Image 1 (tube, rainbow, N blue to C red):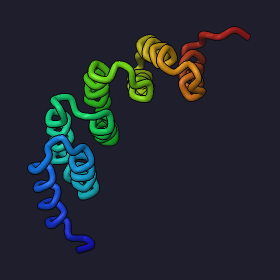
Image 2: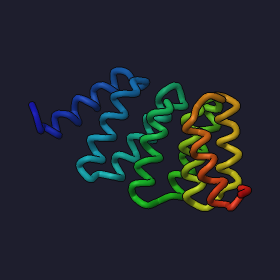
Image 3: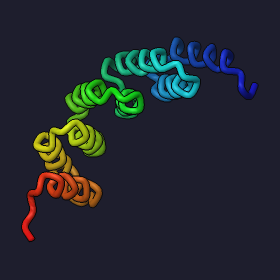
Length: 145
């Protein structure tokens, strides 16, 4: 039924019990809880999903968890989630970019630049990485006129 949040929760619970590695079930359930203002439950679901999916989760689950922390103004927690994720997904350039953006937000431009250069080593043809890197360099006044 449309709008049956309790029914949706039961369906998600059954889905993750049937297949704890089903990323989309963890993700959608966490998003349901976020949308209903149940931030602690959503956080717990993202964390559980990250543990369940082969013990490391998926990039999408880690990013959803980090974004939840950011939306709730806990930049340090978001950064901690991103740092843990980039250890597991070393070759994911998009994840490196998101972590770098968070580092820049908390004032660690040097580490942000390092991560962006790592992302370029993985995907040298991604203009977005260059754009973010340029913005960080400019914010640090590292340019010539």
